[in-house]
Length: 215
Image (cartoon, rainbow, N blue to C red; front, side):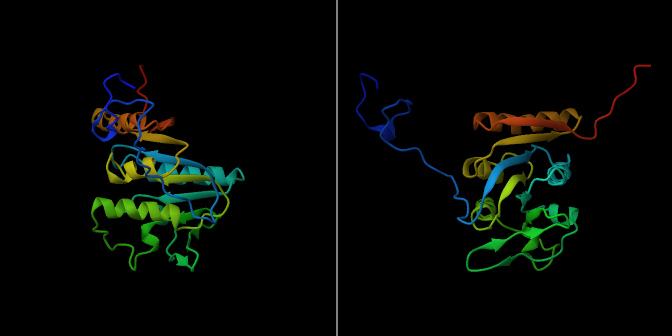
């Protein structure tokens, strides 16, 4: 505490151990009937680099290794996961909550397209509403005994990635990029966002890369 401290923490910008005001908690509570051991986010500052493809491949791989896997499709305005797995059904619910649909191999999947009347209907919502839906996918869906959950995040550093990083306990993220210089610059923003929010980066995947033979 500073010698000149007047104990008016709400007007003070100094970080000290004696601050009396609690920091705001944005965390979302997992459903009481849910159990999720590890949560991995798939992120990129740029669209079209293969986030959904990587999410799907990681989920299939871990499922084949004997783990119970789930995918939370957080890309509300551009959901790709249901089509990637050939799922066209609708999510069911009860008084207890919503139940994700399963792929043919048993992967639990939740996506906005599993709630729409028509999969081509646009979702025309503002950012805070979209972010709220993603939190509901975490809190209102019953995720039963999940070993690994992969979250397919939309591109950028906007409302949804911020909400996921603040509201869900992420064990780490995998960044997806491609070789173009423009993409690298934009993806760096997502990496720096994760660093500022103390989110571990556990992998980097460069899609559409090539090797030019020196001969």
